[in-house]
Length: 337
Image (cartoon, rainbow, N blue to C red; front, side):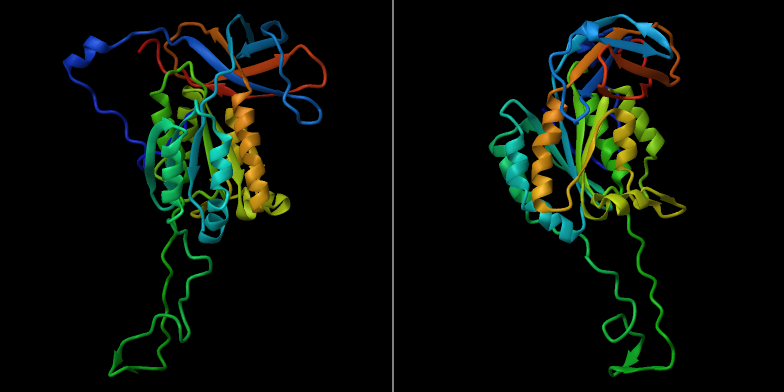
C-alpha cells in the first residue's frame, strides 16, 4: 500500500538534463486500468469473479480485457479542527493496524496549507514514529473568533483608558482556508510517479470542507482520473451526521464547498464512510482499506489517438443483483512517456 502527502499546489517535476535520457523508458500508455469494486445487496464485497464476468465499455464501445489483478495502493491525508483532530489521534493505533507489512505509507496534513509529513516507506516503525509526531499537532480553534466585548480586541488607549469609549470597536475575523483540493492534488501528483500498474488510492480523514485552494475541483479530478487514482475517506464532524452531511454538500459562493469528499469518491470509484464517534472511525479504517485492497483491476488497450478529451467508462457484471463501483471515466495522459 502507499500513503502520501505533498507540497501545496502539487508542483510538477523540473525537466531533467540530457543524462536523464539514458534512463528513460518509453512505454505505450494506451493501456487503460479500471479499478472495480463489486458488492452484493447487503453491501458485502463479492470475490471470486473472473474476467468473463466483466464487460467494459469506453464511450459506449465494448473493450477487450487484457489485464485482471487486485494489487492495492493507499494514501492517507488529514487536516481537522482541534476537537475532531483529538478524536482522530486516539484512533491512530487502529489506523496503523489496518496496514500490512507490505504497504508503503506516506502522510500529508493540511489546513490553510499542505505539509508532507513523511515520504513513502514501509508500514512499520517509521509509520509509528510519524503518527506519534502527529499527536503533537493541534487543530484550529473550536469556537468562533471573539471580535468584541471585554474579552475581544480593544481600541486605542492612553494609560489603559480608552480614548473614546463611545466608539464601537469593529474587528473583522480573518478568513479561513481549508485547501482540500491542494492536498488531494499534491498526493495525486506524487502517486502519478508511482508504477502505473499499482492501484493508487487517496485515503482522507476530514470534515470535507474546501475553501481557497489554488487548485480547482475540476483540475484535481482530471489528474485523479488520468492516473487511475481513487479517493476514499472517513467523514468526521458535521459531515458524518447523515442529514446534516447532505445539507453540507452545498457550494456557497465565495465560501467554497462545505463537504466535497463525496464528489471525489463518486467520480473516482471510491467510498466515503461516516465516523462520528471514535469507535466508528476505528471500524472504518479496516473496512475502507480492506475494500481498497480487495478490488479488481481491469485493463484494456484503447484506440491510439492524441485526443485529451474525457472518455466515459461503464463496467458491467454478468451476474444479477450486484452493484459495481468504478470510476466514471478518464483523461488520456498521452501516447507515450
